[in-house]
Amino acid sequence: ADTCEKVGKKDCVGFEYSDLKGMRVAYVKGAPALNVNNQAYLAYGGLTWDDVKIVEFGGFGDSWAGMINGDVDAAFASTNSGKVYEAENGPRGVVIPPIDPNNKEGLARMQEIAPFFTPMNATVGATIDGKQPRPTAGYAYPVLIAMADQDPDLVYNMTKAMVDLFDVYDGNAPGISGWSKDKQNFSWVVPYHDGAVRYWKEIGLWTDEANAHNDNLMKRQAALRAAWDQLSSQNPENWEEAWDKARRDALKAGGFGVVF
Image: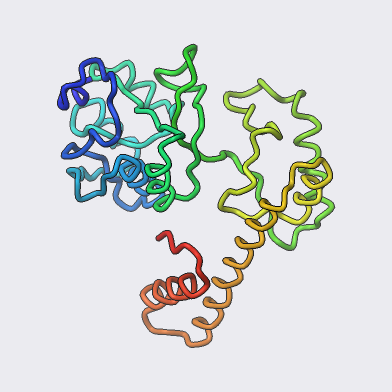
């Protein structure tokens, strides 16, 4: 609550991500997978790391201890994380600002940093349980993953089973309704396996648009693989620096988003 009061928004009414300008935002050392989320939410609000005060922590748990203790104003976590529930019941409370699905410019900035984020309504979590769903952004978790050379029939049957048996397992865990066929995202950042595509086509959910998107993702992967193989044959001394450049150059040449 005190974070909201810093910008004159008592009880956090109308508090937005843009209001974090000049405030303290958690940065977990050695955890880019965590920090990119904070960066993406800042971007949604029209901010960058340069617009906030970075507070470094040694781990995820430490960053949320900092939230509770008043050492930092913002940190990232899933709404249903135990740390967020702990903060909700702490002396400062917790607020989860909304993500407006109609804010196309904000979402474009967010997805430029983290293209795996999509608008969603959170139904489980601190300040949310038993109340109206909260408009925010998120990504699928867990995700069924298969290698490209996995037996297409196996992938087809696994996908089919997850759909056919949905009513059997739905409701047995928080958030499990996300496995519903109606909530699948066919324009996400990971390509679908041929076996899965066969099933989605069979039930009429796979569109020409989804196919074009999937083909583009496959071309992106092929461009990265070609760049990797070429650089590997050169065996440069400073691999990390050389790969960073080769990766960027290959993606730009193919017209693909570099992202990071």
